Length: 340
Ligand SMILES: [Zn+2]
Image 1 (tube, rainbow, N blue to C red):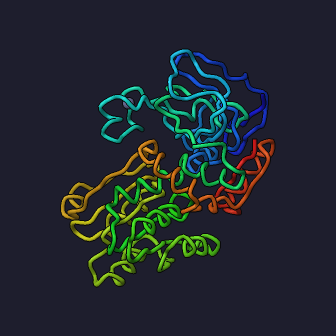
Image 2: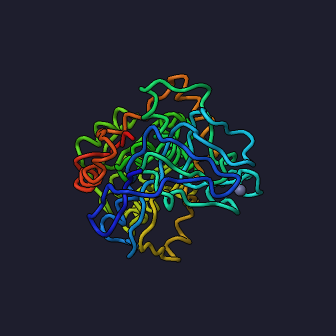
Image 3: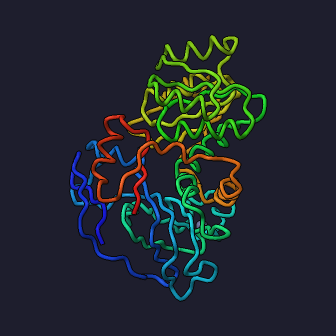
C-alpha cells in the first residue's frame, strides 16, 4: 500500500509502506474509508519534535474491519468502526474511570500511520466502536471528526465544566478549538466567546454556536474577556493551542473557581507557581480520552442531531496528502479530509 511518511520539516511523501498484518491476537486490520490531517501533525511538519527517521503519519480514522486476531471477541469483519488516537484495553481501572487515553496498556495510533488505506489497530475490542450499520457517505466526515477533533473538543468542554448558563471562552481557532465551541453549545453554554482573528474560522465558530468573537490575544485578549464578564473572567475556558501564551491567556481569562480545559499539546509551557496559586482555577486536560465519548457521539451523529464534519473544509484524495499538510500549514484550510 501507499501512505503518508514524514521525512523532515515540510517533507511529507506519499510512498510505499508495508501492508499491515495481525501481529497480536487482539489486533484488527481496517480498510480505511477516510483519514485526515491533525493540527498536532503540523508540529513535526514544522520541525518541532520531528523524528530523524521517516515517520508514518496520521492517527484519525474510520473504516471497515477486514480481519481480526483470534482473541478479538466483539469487533467483527465487515463492521464499520470508529477509533481514537490511543488504542486502549477499556478494561483497566484507568479506562473504567474514563481516561482511556492513559490506559495502562495505551498504544499511540500515530506510530502506526492512519494516513494510509489500511491500518492495524491494537486492542481492537477496547479501542473500536462499531456503527449500527454501514453509514451513508455523507456521515463519514462527522464520524471521522468523532475520532479526534470532536472527541477532543468535547473533552475540553467537559474538563472546563461547561454547563447551561455558563460563559465559555475558547482560546484557539483550529479545528479542535472550533469543535470546543461546538461542544460547549451542545452542553448548553449561555455565552460562547471564540478567540480568533481569521475570518473563515470566525464564520465557522459562529455557525457552531459562538455568540461573540474576540480578536485580541495575550493580555489584551484577557482584558477583553474580563470586560465582557463584569471584570470576573469566564466560568469555563477551553485551551486548544498549547503555547505559553495560549495557556496563560486561558488561565488568566478564567474567574476564580472557574475551570480550564486544556487540550492543545503543550510545547515549552511553564506555569508560574505563585500566579497559579492565586488564580484559584481548576486545571484539567491532556490527551483526550476520546473513547469515553465515542458511543454517545456516534449516536448523535448517526441520528443526524449533530454535524461536526463541517469542520473539514478541504477534501483530497490520499495521494495528495502533501498538499493537505501545506494547505493547513499555510492556513488555507482548517482541516483536510483524506479520501482513501
Ligand atoms: Zn485500560
